[in-house]
Image (cartoon, rainbow, N blue to C red; front, side, top):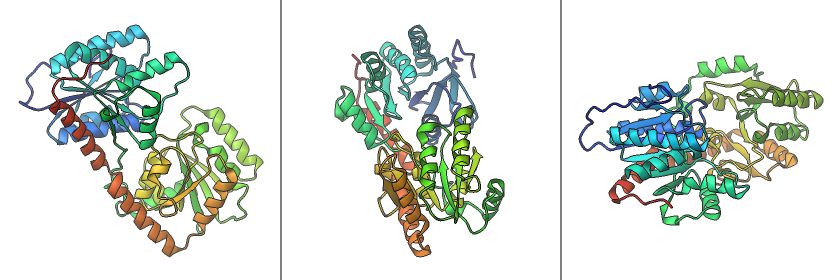
Length: 400
């Protein structure tokens, strides 16, 4: 790993005819969709015999990059200052030339501007991925975002995101590709979770015997909808369940205290658990009877929804964003009016009332749904197919 001001460039020879892909992201610290996808594609590239490079400001996921056999270059790519962006473009151009990079793949706006400048200088192919729908308030913001449609191919992580791109930015639709997030079904599989892990988690979370578990996974931030779920609980007349919030507050202690006050005010202290972050999410899903996605803003994709279905768990989610694509209504879960606490309560009640036979049939459909549409292998194969498509197409498309 190099220092932040100058990439540590290895000028040694590389394997003949081995394509080189450089992914650029702000950092590799918080394991969100952008960061996870970067690691997963790096792993897939190495497995395919390609060279995988990543440039970022660093972070906790560097170990996974290294263990994959990819190479990391530390650059200050988090910065949004125009001078820093331009300087980073020069550094990336130097890296592209020295490492023989064929494709530079940008997954975030500030690094994308640097990557685009570098691609213009070097003739390297330039690809982007929209991991979400960016805010577009004001002409300056829209122009800043527009770098993401300068790619020869623009990848969207869902139909929802693709529609946002088409209706917001000038783009030739033949350059747009939809590649949905994928789940590693070797890990997110009921057969891969031994009983001992469930027992350990039940003790850690103080789960009472004989009670159903409603779980909302997601960091503690207001738009994830914890408060709406707490409101919904006041409309349930049953007491045969507990609710577990799984996720880190990431320093948002005021929001957590707000939720704790809401729990106390509504007399839900005996029902609600704040579990904090969990390192064993497959076991967490297996411990749940119902998984909730109550995001008040549309999720661009909604990884939690797909992971839960991979584990055979019914999902209740608000009917917007990526959830409309990932849930088969009435077959793998239930979709309800966004923000409607009473509708959410009715759906939770229906999910908790599922008998064993119906729950089993829903699980079978959910698992098959994931295997057919949302596997990690499918995501990686589709991404590498885009890389091959660009390399086979000849000269890069120039930006404006």
